[in-house]
Picture 1 (cartoon, helix red, strand yellow):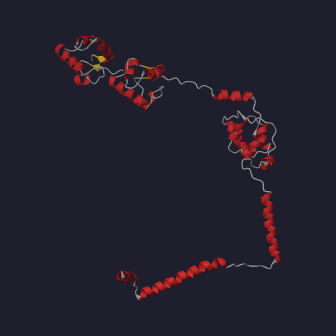
Picture 2: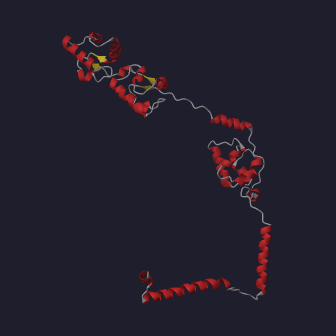
Picture 3: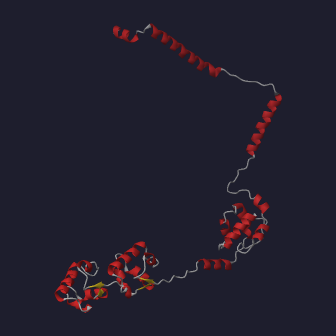
Length: 301
């Protein structure tokens, strides 16, 4: 035990000095902390005039505090607008710029209102004047009781605003129109316009309007919308010469697949050139519905 205590509580000379100095510092801080609160430093003044002035100032603050009125930010002072404006009953849709100025409105603000009316604007109710950005809420509060808007002005303005626009009339020829022309049709955007042109080029042209229903994604509702505005010129159809076309050329057409194209070429090689379009009926796989669909696109030379 003695060895243990000696190991932990034996200090060198330098350590002993450090402990001593640290103890003195701690005692000094404790003394200062005790003495400072007990010191009362007061400064007396013999200047009676200064004392009197201070007392009067303090009394004034108390009086102002007791008689102070709360300021209502939601009810601003309208005295400036009242002193500036001198309104009489008026219709804001009828009075001139000079009449606005005569009532006390700033000339610049009067011009803004006249420009608004010149461009087609109308005041249909009193509150509409508040929407003029140059009119302050204080000015509107002064003017509002004098605003008179007849019912006839309101009805006229409403009927003018909601006048039904005239529908545009188009005449788009499907076999010669481009994508921009087609976009003029109701319900046709850039995507449908490109699809219509692409399918038309594959066919060689349209010979009847309901072929549009074969365009991918084009439904009957959209078709009915565009129907009154389209026409077809069958003379612009590009035809296939069945006496010269090979299988590769024939099968490009949407109404012919590889097997029908092969059957046409085989029939021609075995029987010679076709003498009439009706000879196609003799080809295997050419049934009546296919023949009627392909007939407008066939030529013999």
